[in-house]
Image 1 (cartoon, rainbow, N blue to C red):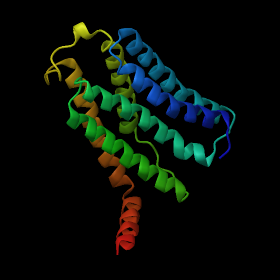
Image 2 (image 1 turned 90 degrees about the vertical axis):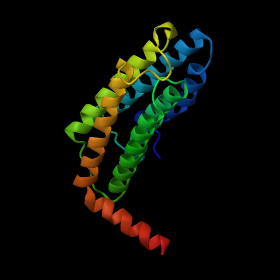
Image 3 (image 1 turned 30 degrees about the vertical axis):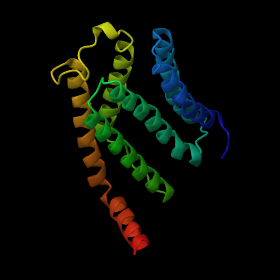
Image 4 (image 1 turned 45 degrees about the vertical axis):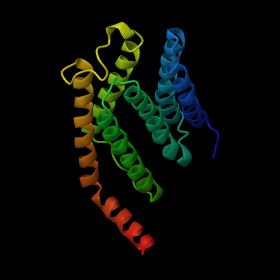
Length: 196
């Protein structure tokens, strides 16, 4: 592994994730706000490492593997802690987390075999909508007096927003699996051969 600036930022994002979780879960409002700030810093490294890698053409194989995984670790951690605190329904979180790690694994498998999985337009919408929803809920959750019952009812804007994220997640996940079914079948054949 070459410890390039983008790779350092990817590692930093992974290391900041438990710091975010620790601070955000504290009962003290100041620490919770600090955890929110840490999350925003970690999320910013995702944009910046991609910019640096493209701008200076320092893309490494390790970075291609770890960057999307680091993203999923950070976002999934936020979603899981939201469900733990009662801000979201667990079923939504598990659907989103399962899909994201499944597609990340598929992308990494394809990359390992020298093939590229192109990000679909629906997946880009999903990612943008998901990140925006997480950012808004992070900020909103620092003002507990504005939250309703836990979890909020399905017609509350939080539930409706993440229900939309969940639907986009499912649609984009099936689109990835259909468009890249050759990789899926190859993984299935290899797994079946290994089991036998």
